[in-house]
Structure formats: structure tokens, C-alpha cells
Image (cartoon, rainbow, N blue to C red; front, side):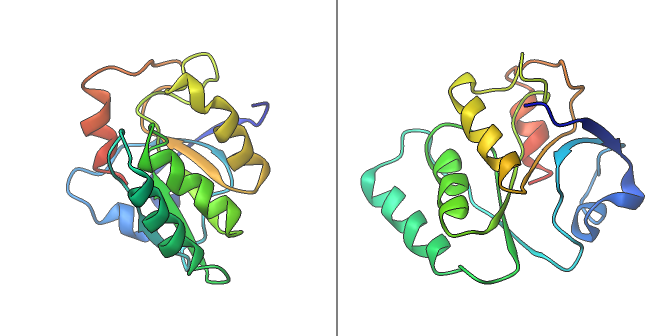
Length: 148
């Protein structure tokens, strides 16, 4: 992932993110954030997804093709990663919020580095509150969940 990681501050956040309880002081962003007019739809689910769960994600996200929507998810194994893939397949913007920093050296899960590259190549974004070199840890996942 050769795209520059930029730090942004609340004035540049999506309006909905500024409204949450305990908003982040800043975010690190790689790629292109959705516009403030774009509808955000967060999709999360089991890391041990079933074929039924994946089919439902494909059906729901596929039905949104053509709308100004960004699918937001955590880049995790299972439904999260599948939601990003379904968004890409539908030609939708997708925003990944991993439980790690954005540096390719620490991006978690490692098995989704290629997916994160595809997200960026397709005009999507990676977003993290964590410093770019911060690895994933048990405390980083609840912290990231509040910004999805």
C-alpha cells in the first residue's frame, strides 16, 4: 500500500462521527473518504461466518448498487471482510476500520492486506484512530468499534 497515510482532525470528520460520545481527537486515513453527503452503512458480524451469512451480505449489499453509500466495516475475518468484498463487487465505496494502525507492517488481520489494497485501488478508504505503527491488541477492537 503505497498511498500516503494522512492525519485528519474533527473538522474534517464525516458529520455523524463528530456526533458520537467520545469522538476521536484525530484519525489516520489512507485513500478517499466518503463525502459528507454519502450515506454510511456499517456491516459487522461473526468472524466465523456461515455461507448463509455471506449470502445475506451479498444480497443486501448487492441491492444497494448505484446508490451513494459507503459500506463501513472492520476489515476483520468473516462477515466484516466479506462486506468489504461485496461492496467492491457492487461498485460501492467501502471504508475499512481495522483494529490496528494503517501501516502495512502492522495491518490486522494480515490475511486482509490484499483486500485493503483492493479497497484503496477502488477509491475506498482505510481509517484508524491508532498511530500508523500500532499493532492490534485486545483493547484496540472496542476502541475502533465506536467509530464504525
